[in-house]
Length: 288
Image (cartoon, rainbow, N blue to C red):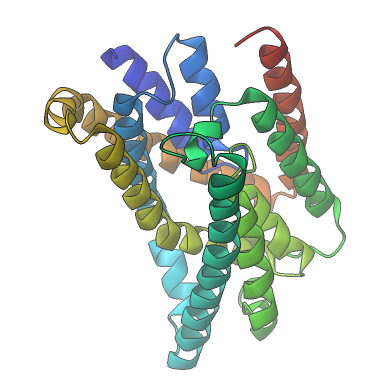
């Protein structure tokens, strides 16, 4: 794994992670096009560090907006905290249940049955990209969306949080089904103002990312415990560099996302996902 490859993957991850186009799908396709194995241990470690970089990009970019949106009053903060907890619990129940079902039923005859074994399946990625593309198109073209941010009507209600959390749970097992694309679209369709849906979606991302990183790290330990020391020693420097580039690319992607969302161009991300699904399907048929 050269530094050149690391920088490319970091930029792809940073841009795609924070745009509603599925970072995992883009990173997996990029790895295959670069002749790399997405399931290799060093790639798992790199992915952990790239996610860490984009998580810090989210915190830096949204911190002031979160303070204005959710921390102005004690009552507002309590409502936000409850909504965040409710959405995360539903994500864990639905996403965890799906993952458990896949591992225990579909992968029951395979050693080290992890749902991640399906993540390099381009046919599944193409289907997931097409599904989220349709969802984004529907939300982007819906007449219910509003940009109003600073009114009582813009609060995240219990029903909003439940719906967004449930949709986020559906994203966990399926690479290509963009988490940000699905959750922001779910918020828009529920009548949540555009910026508030974006704020809440990425607040959820900060809560979800550490457990996702921990799962990746645990899987690495379980499958590579005998060689973990040498792996970390050889891959930690490029992985740290990747985290830095993912952070910088993530900040750029968030500025782009906010501008397009405010300008009413959300549906174009749906168009892109549908085109990406067609490209991934072609690559699958071509033998990648």
